[in-house]
Length: 249
Image (cartoon, helix red, strand yellow):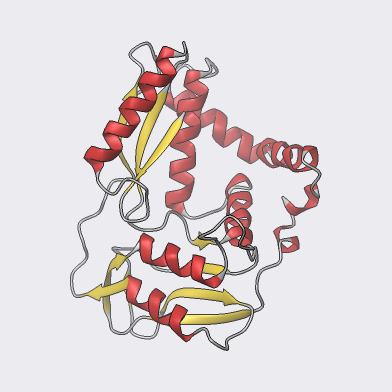
């Protein structure tokens, strides 16, 4: 199961390039006698709300516990449904989704995550107690400059800002600060009032944060009209032998 991202925040910026990559990857997998499906998923704006190591991990555990942002939940369900179909564990998309929902409701998803963390030498208590994943103590709020609709939340600009904060690296020898990051409060299409939070930055120290604030503020645009919605899944590329259900759109 391959998730090929498309858009500003992705390696492949346009659907045609992403589709070519997905088709090549599917051919490679098929040549190795594997059943392969690739979904082209939108990354023009950040997926979910969290950007940064501890923040994203907290958000992932939230999804396993039945919460999480709707777009991240839907992406997880689509990918998971495809995986169950490929593995022969579900007979239809509806069956697969019901099984995934059942694993979340019963707590099985959380317990599996706990076993995975423990097997890698981590503390399994972080799965249900996400506060154990410490985030940077200082918060800076990026406010909407006017009433209207969010028309842009540039995933590339937000991602690069998080790297500049220390949440990522540009060289292999650079350290990563797992506690810093960005919480995206508003997405394209959301109505906002002037002064409402567009994003929240979690930083170690406010000193010197002004350039990061400017970068994140510049990633957003507010207009008078709501933009046309973008589909989460742009396309589905499958091994012809696959029996899983088409989920594009």
